[in-house]
Amino acid sequence: MSKRKMIAFLAAAMVITSVQGSIFAEGENLSTESVQGAETEVKVPNVFTAFKDIANHWGKMEIINAATKGYVNGYEDKTFKPDHSVSRVEFIKMAVTALGLPLEVEANPWYWPYFYAAQKSNVIGDKEYPANGYNDPMTRIEMAKVAVRSAGLTATTDGEYMVLATKNGLIHGTGKGQLDMYETTTRAQSVVIIERILKVRDGEKLPVDEAAIKKAEDFAAAKLDPWGRAIRTTNLPKNAKDFPYILEDIPNEMYEMPYKQIKIFSITTSAQNYLDGFGIARANKASKNIKDYFDHVLNIDYRTIDYKWAEELHKSLSLEGKNQYSINERLRNLKKYVDWVKKYKIVTKGSVQPEPSMVYRQGFNKMRSKFDFTIVSAPKEAFSDWDDHFFEWSIFWNQVLNPPFNSKSVGVRYQGYTNIALTADDRLSGYGEDITYDYKLIK
Image 1: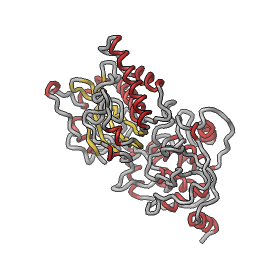
Image 2: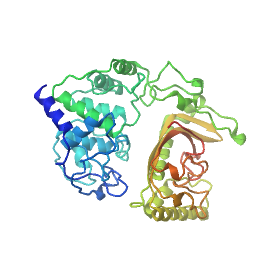
Image 3: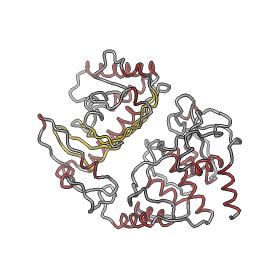
Image 4: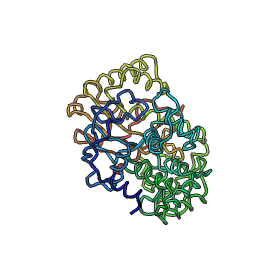
């Protein structure tokens, strides 16, 4: 066994008692490695002495090794939460710390020194992510780009990056020959990728996934959609004719989710015939409006929510068909919702990822989207005490019509697909955008 491997083995096998501090918040165990939460950082000695949730996890040794090196920490309840998703700021901080890149600036927000260090070292580009997207989940293609650049390589397209990542063993497939490039990644997966980066930088030749290489090469040679994503021509969904094209990294079940039958709006103009007239720029705008709205609605924390949250959400909503009274009433109800969240100490986490190529018309313009949410904490009382607002909110603002969750759903991660209705100006009305009304669960 080489000296380097022996050191790694010993580090992975040791009981960790020397690492001090935690970069995670107390209370509901939410990571402070986020744009909003950096102020709640606390220090807790010996937080790694027992990650009680990794004993039988496939990534156990890599997680312990990473924690030993000090570039990833745990939670105050002595868990690691290996299957939780990783945001861009979390991964970039982990990568910069693991690579030992110098932090040369002190600035607010807290994450900027890490992004500056990553940019200066060409680990990420100057405009890699949108200004309001630092806290979004890190996708596998974004992680592949960081890995390739960290290994001293470069490319110009997503396909080229993925080919380099797979050929160098930095990225493997996710099973069944899939790369899932635009899917999110977990804490355990991110640790594995960073460990591979360190090995490649150390001169080690990694094993590769031949099926993943072939998939990456096919992707690099594929025809691309207007957003630069690979279009596939095999294993098509049954209703492929309803869409302008079928994307490589979107599963058939998202395409095959049936349109909800609404008698008054029974005539549907499918995405196949609608996207061209709708327009790419308009689809981008609508997609952003959907994402921004649900980023607000699905990410709730009683410790940080205030009336400013209500005012910002209110400003993002359409005023179509609203008189001054109804405008004021909506804002009043939003503020009352804030009070209710604080009363019951609600914490939730989630996102909605709109698919701009899946825009169609059924009475209203609609855009198919993928959702992912978890009720982190909520008492039983919060599921029954709606006061006079039963038809306006449940745990989430304006998500009440057919909720798949109840008090037994705290801590359960829900993922699925939904169709989001838009107003004439491609914004959300604040009523009718219920992801639990027209949806399909996949987990």
